[in-house]
Amino acid sequence: MPLRLAPTFRARLAESAHPRIGMWVTSGSPVVAEICAGSGLDWLLVDTEHSPVGLETVQTLLQTIAAYPITPMVRAPSGDPVALKQLLDLGAQNLLVPMVDSAEEAEAVVRAVRYPPRGVRGVGSALSRSARWNRVEGYLADADEFTSLFVQIESTAGVAEAAKIAAVDGVDGVFVGPSDLAASMGLLGQQTHPDVTAAVLGTFDAVRAQGKPVGVNAFDPAQAQRYLDAGARFVLVGADVTLLANGSDDLARRARRTLGD
Image (cartoon, rainbow, N blue to C red; front, side, top):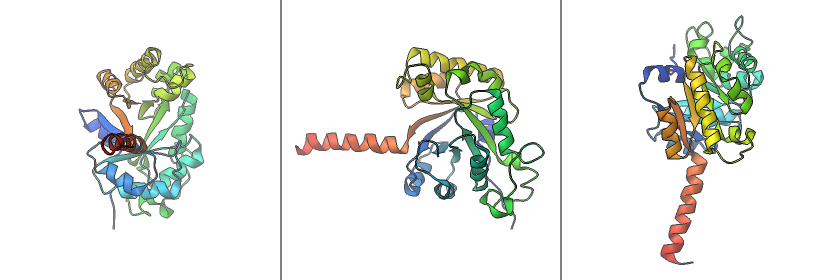
């Protein structure tokens, strides 16, 4: 029976007049992912760079999230072509590649997610969830329509090359990471430092000038609003593990005040 795939994150951005608000999923728990998927947010970012989440878990999380009206994206551990191929084959339609510092690196990532002759992605659609085991008609011919690619700028080198990175054909958008950017500026842990904020906003301008959507990580509500006001089209405002850590800390504080120590 022919099957249809969900719209890509690229398509969701294009069809919406409003910014897309999302959160990280890093715990690896399908239960937590399902709770987050039912939250009413617009998108979830499943992380494989700074989490214990492996390939089998990514597939399980995507299967879990698929039951809900929310768009999942997967952050790859790197731009390695093998890693990207595996994530695509297990059904990740939307990829975020971290630490992209140049147009040349962006071009290599684009080639990694496209089939020949436009790229070097290996063909395994009959064996994988990406094409629902060849039940998605025209998957090989239309694979570019079924996938979207976003790259992450999170260093001073990437900021300097932001316009060139965004201009690469096949890059559907740019996501700015203030944490690593702050570290590369000698401001480790100071994501809201005025110099970091200025670098983020400068990257916004460079990316938007190329006609590409730009997003950012911003857990601080005031900073998130500032970035939205500056034209961010997609923002991550929290994470599953952060919510649990903060919530359990708050519970402990309230319980000690109420019940005594």
